[in-house]
Image 1: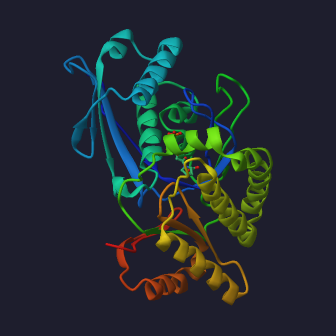
Image 2 (image 1 turned 180 degrees about the vertical axis):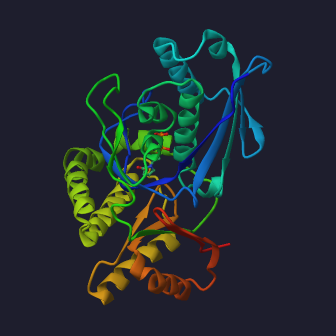
Image 3 (image 1 turned 120 degrees about the horizontal axis):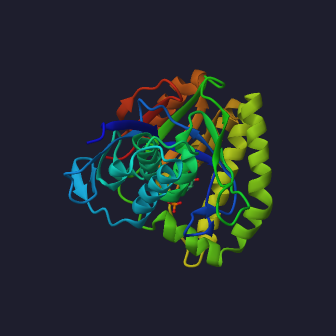
Length: 342
Ligand code: 2P0
């Protein structure tokens, strides 16, 4: 039997969103996206893999429960890594012929819509690459599991290049800066609802590509400009530019969702209240001190600098008195995770 290989991969939160594919099978995006990878101590997936002659069929266990291995994306990831291993002759044929057992756990609520698939696939592919000793760009294979997973392969600030090649060979993630570059950056996750999203990202973005006129403008004009600007802002540690672009891109992404037909509505009244509170707070401060961003769900992710965390936390607790702290930790790209509604 093989050694048991364990890998850890954190969640990433995009400032410039990925929404829309140019190739659904290869998972190639229409535009570049930019994200920050959170602290592995706070929100991450941990996956162990092994291959053995006595495992009768490939197995996958998610948070302790055995799940079907029939998922095509999962099989694509395993097959891609094995194909590279054969090409590179990195392990013997016997190991490649054995079935695998994959056990993955998240240290955060899987149903909360907090990019669990990104962390999960990044982790799985990293572990499989080590098991079969392949030397390859892991982000390219993680992308085949879930597009945004390619960004979780790196820490700090990451850019996923849409690429131009039809085979996806240049659709990879690269690091803009590691987490030590902007040590003061903090993230607060506000969990508005921990229920599963009603329209999957796959469905939502496919509908947007087919029906949204705004998406065309976003892909051609706004996203490329914003990617360039936010990469500069990250390099210069220019928080107000970083924050303004992040909020505008979140707003445009949700506008694209509404421009889809039928529309996808991910934000709730509580989400909109958070937007209002952050703008009011920035206005009172006379400076952009906090940025919000919302993924395909109602939960808010706030980017802010360490010095402003205490004041913003007390503001949140004041506005949403039912708030309960789920966990408050944070180191690398630190996160505070708060449940707004129980
Ligand atoms: C992002 N999201 O950039 C955007 C913002 C959600 C909103 O990437 O079909 O789960 O697996 O490629 O990666 C969610 O999409 O979709 C996503 P697939 P994925 O983070």
